[in-house]
Length: 487
Image 1 (cartoon, rainbow, N blue to C red):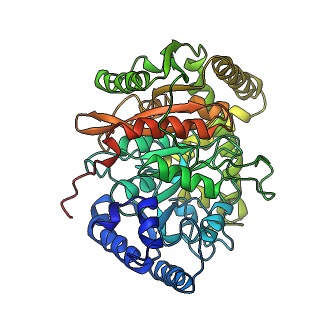
Image 2 (cartoon, one colour):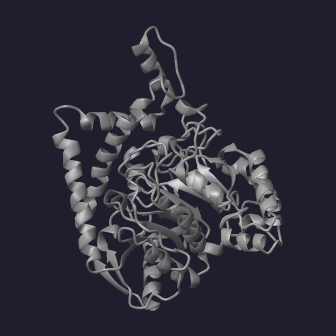
């Protein structure tokens, strides 16, 4: 039995029946990491020793007859922008290469309480800025389906680890599609919950009004399971919503007859690969065969989402990253005076993409340009949100492609930032509106995975998971695994 490719709920069942121990599962996945991570390069930091200690504690708790939690003994890993007490958190940046947080993020604390076993921290685009995980300050991660291609970004390490059997599930963060786009490229399930559904306390901020933590899993049941653990109000995060958390796993039913699904025509525009469009439209037709009512609709301000995002997100980033000046956190490069120290630290600590966005954001916020750029972008954001509100007055959810293409080759878009930004074309509007969305495998093009994106009403993750689960039950795409030359 290949323990490294079982889902969290399958492993959970085996563990509860005592057919396998948490230590055996942990050992199997660490062996898998040793076998394949030299090629995939998903991990920045491995914590095997702590993982075995956690697994032993879970086995001991079970031996005493205790119930150690819904994810007890199931190994996972975290994107390296989530704070972990006593374990370095780098954000894939040389600025934070040696920084060790003194506390756990709320989601990490909740996973630990549920019995999770942490294998380590995963690679990403520096400070979550990028769409390919080529912008890591250390090394790029590769797509397990084709090692010459990118896994997507910025949660590329998290997604690649799950797809390659190097973690049973992972957490990522999604600011403009950073969970869903790589999930589409690597053939796994990735969810961005509603803004406020999951606490951001302990997530190193990129763009605070857009960032959201979410699960990356091998199937929809695992997505419901992990979301149920990490969701819920947190007094430490003032943007956390004080709303009850449904039983997401209980919401999984194969019945979707009568649900109304809108298909926005703007998401099938220029830049869409014809074969990707064919695969996605075939998936939508499958939903219709299952009893859903699918209709074409329009979100007329979609074309303005990308330019507005690239004003709002860099503006917030320029403010959030001002704290990295060589005084409070991480790297310090000496200079002849304090100004020179600031300049040396920031010029040597940040990579090119981070510097580009800081300059864009600082310009947009500067005196004389604020009204023309940042304020106008906020007004556009309101129009985008109203588009979705109008659509959800008619439909239960929306269905679109997750990305306009399959995974592109390493270096293919590295010299063209605009082409890189366009790869998040289908995901960015959802962050601008603060809505939940999920990507799940719906087919293949050129031998590479294609993702279907489902977009829901605010705080209605249960309907998203229900429809995704129903679709998944009729297909085998989520069961296909990349060939990495080892068992």
